[in-house]
Image 1 (tube, each protein chain N blue to C red):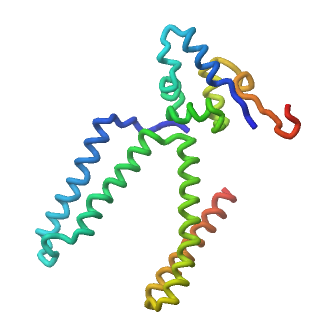
Image 2: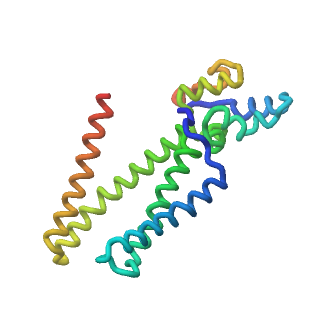
Image 3: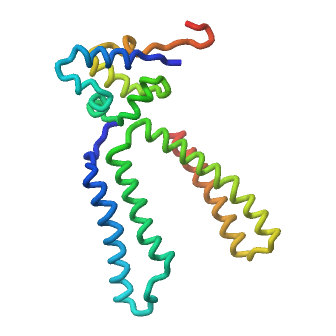
Length: 78
Length: 132
C-alpha cells in the first residue's frame, strides 16, 4: 500500500504560510487542477494519485515524491 | 489530468439548468406549429424527454467543467462497469422471462441484438485499449 503525509504537510504549510488560504484543501485542489474531494480522499489514504499528480503535489510542496509518499509492503510489513 | 475547461460558476449552472430545457420546450412548440400533423398538446412522454434530456446533457457539461479530474474519471469508469454488468445480467433474464410469457418475436430480437451489441462493444473496446 501507499501511505502519504499529505494532510500533515498541508496543515504545516497552512500554519507557516502568510496566505493560509493557498494551503486549504480547496486552494491546493485549484492549483493541482483536481477537485477538493480528491484531496480529501488522498489525505484519508483511500485514493492513490497518478504519477503525474504525485509529481505535481511534490512540486507544490517543493519536496521529492518519496518525502510525501511512501510505499509499504503489506507482506513484509515494511 | 489538467482541467482544460473553465470552471462554471453556480450562477452559470442555474442559468444553464433553466434556459436549456426552456429553449428545448420552445423548440418543441415551434416544431409542432410548423408540422401540423403533430398532435397538440404534445404527449407527456415527449414533454418529459424534451425537459429531462437537456438536463442530463447540462449535468454532463457541469461534470466536465467542474468535477472532472483523474479520480472522478476512475469513479465514472467503475460506475459504467457496474451499469454494464447490470445490463449484461438483466437482459438475458428478461429474454427468458419474456419468452416464457409469450412476448413477440420482434421484442425478443431487439433484446437479443442489444445484449449481443453490448458484448461486442465491450470486446472491441477491450481489444482496442489493450493494443493501443
